[in-house]
Length: 280
Image (tube, rainbow, N blue to C red; front, side, top):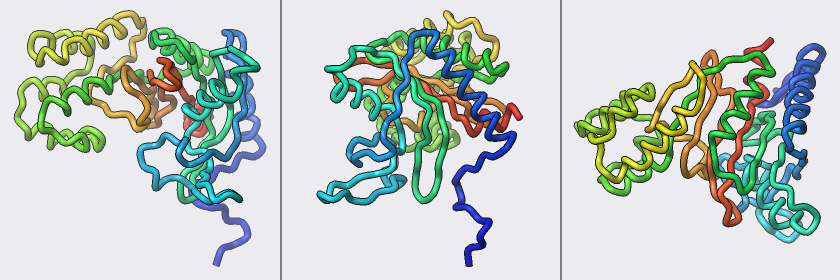
């Protein structure tokens, strides 16, 4: 029996002070993004299933439209926004900096509010990280910044007989048990100095990607930074440097580089529900 006061597990409810806090947060960030040249877009809640870009397609809430095409509630916004801008809006605008304030949905009844931005055709992730840091300064938050590089993991997997699921699942103990000295050193990396120490130790096919991480991390003037070259992000479209902001065991934001529509682009999302939990 479902009682009248119950709501589905995983759904969100804001009212009174919490609803005001949510609206204030959205206003602060939207005002900031508008000032730095982003324009707002509101995309449909529904998307064709093959346009969705999440790792586990079983998390999609799916059904069929009147022509029997598989449709899903939006599970992620990034590639959907880029596709709409480049394919549907290209005759109306050539603007490449967009933000959105909207929820995403996953099976069975999970909904998550977020503010995301996409910087289409731009590929210097340093600029994106600074933008993300400024958004947290507006909120008077100083979360930890964790930087990783999916290209490093992909290179390791392609050159060695190692199952990528060990990285996806964060199975550190099993990676240690492989008894590969340079890999164990990579697992232990925490800062730029550790990262520099890998050069000359790791296989040559990893040097370029490690140097790329060193360059980005060295340019960021931020004390709360963690270097994690082997962290595997949940967003399957990230293909290079990526990062997340963490505070009190909550992930507050994720961002990274990706390719879509033949362009290198950047994007991040601020996770509204988690941010409100740590700012109340």
